[in-house]
Image (tube, rainbow, N blue to C red; front, side):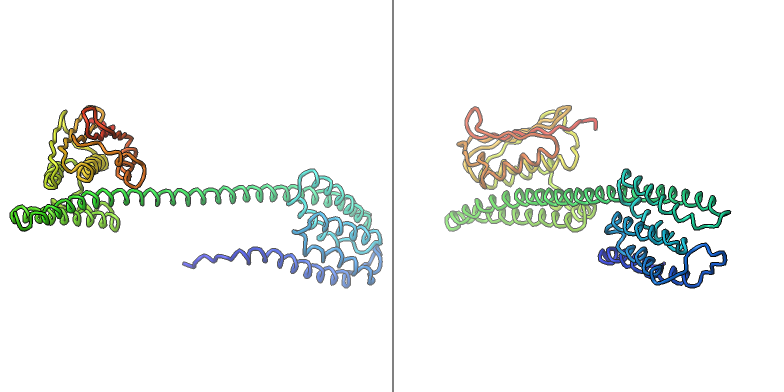
Length: 400
């Protein structure tokens, strides 16, 4: 199967101009040969001389630029053809030049202008029919009239097709730009998703590791058993962080299907509420007591919602580790018929750092962005009894 040949824009621009030049030169040669060789047995037209060839050249050579200045070329061609026919030279020699010049105007000009040009072209060509034989003149009149009408209709049709093509080209360009914009928005959204996921994974585990490192360093000599437990917690947090990073890389490289295959193990599985107890134990190892309470009738959440809820809880507890490391935290998850509601609270001192929209408040911004994706909301602020609270609501139907 032959490959389709594509022409460069420069070739597409130059080709019509070259074709017009070739047509003008070839037509001039053919008509010059016709003038020289055509017999005139009845003596209907004037003997061919140098002026006949000059006028023929002035009729056909301007056709080389007919696309650039169609009206000017038609007026010039009609004037030279009228002089040629008035001098009674062989009249069919200018017919093709007049027809092409008028067709170009009909295909490119407005309809009102084309109507005037049609009348003028018809007058010039009808004037040439006087040189036909007595029995042929009525047929020549009909032929010329029908030809002008056909050229008019054909040119108008070509003009409408060209306008439609231009509109389609504009629409195609708009569609291309819209697709590029959508692709850019999708890339930005995916980058934001990756940034949120990295932030949640890295910030949580690094916070836990930082706390345990400080504890191990503090009791390294005085309480080796506690130091060893802290080091084991650090190793566990690092292992889980690496497992989650590996799962994210598999998703990015090969898609979610392969990620599920790679994540069949306990640590590599996608995070969700099923790992809430494990998350609570890791936070408690960092020194923050966590009480988990689940109410309502639990049911399986969609994977995206499950991950969203887990990450919001994880980020809220990470903020407790960073900003209220001596506080007690509680996580309440409630399932109802139309939504999942989460409340993460601590009894430490409320810190305005977590609510400010600067770099320190990036975690809260990420929570809200995650919730918005699934039509949910996140509110955060000081609790009524002190401390700090984060509340999440994600609409999800039990009978989906």
